[in-house]
Image 1 (cartoon, rainbow, N blue to C red):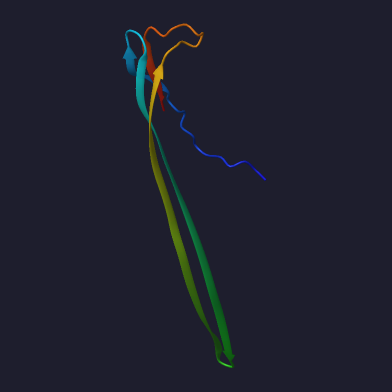
Image 2 (cartoon, rainbow, N blue to C red):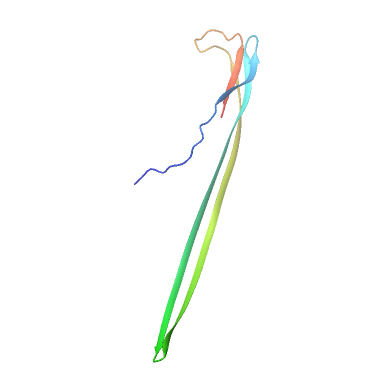
Length: 108
């Protein structure tokens, strides 16, 4: 079984400053969202044909008939989710007291 190939676009990541606190405990709020979509298309085609040839002493004749039938459907699915977060900074990662700083959020 071979690998499926597709043309992928390289994602571009950026950092956006959400909020800053310039002294003491900082309370920060930010939102994150996810959007996802998918489309699936199926198609089925059937074809039936027949041919009849009749011959006589004076010649022959051929009659043919073909019938086609096609059925297709498409399923489209999209979902969007947004979540809000609020938190407070009391200390830095090393355990020292939080004296100020900024919250950055990565954007895709």
